[in-house]
Length: 241
Ligand SMILES: CC(=O)N[C@H](C=O)[C@@H](O)[C@H](O)[C@H](O)COP(=O)(O)O
Image (cartoon, rainbow, N blue to C red; front, side, top):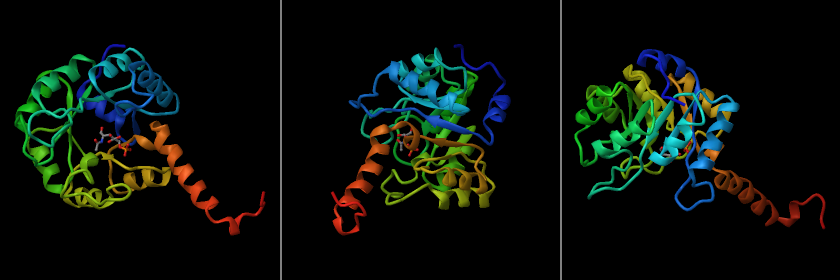
């Protein structure tokens, strides 16, 4: 399918108040193949996802052909001597757009980086796409918007050495964004419908849910861990074998 043909403002309006689903598979896992990612994307759209978040040029190309909802695209890669790994260079921006993304997700943390943030967001705007700055703190969100990001997202909260040790969604950061009057997207560790609703109560424009829907190994592990811990307490069994 061609990229979604709406004006940028219209595209954001279609996402406001909705849920985007991230369909990603870690390298080496059984679902790590463009055909599988495209099938996941079609499945989540059937279930009500308003858009999808997709990693990698080959996956983006496959998903673009499979669904007609907005796509947030990114390339995850380690380049050079930096911890920034979500769409780190201008070439990566070009690849994400060429593969069909409507919105380009870019690590906008304050860590040392290969390409200046302003240049990254300008490159996206020059190709008439929207940019999303993935950040971990309020200051990073503010800087990303100042540098030209169309959206900021809590994606990186909990995944930097200065924001680690977080459990559950980054509700604290969402509150900070709301208090500062910065529009934001809620993403990362949203595992229940109740948590999803809470993000909107705190002011999220839209939310991005990933693993809770699209990582069967992680979903299974939650059940398996619970089952294993129950089984380790035989005195609690109601129906002894
Ligand atoms: C930190 C990072 O690299 N996040 C990635 C960004 O694309 C993905 O691995 C996450 O799955 C995505 O952010 C959605 O989050 P969750 O799967 O927790 O719902």
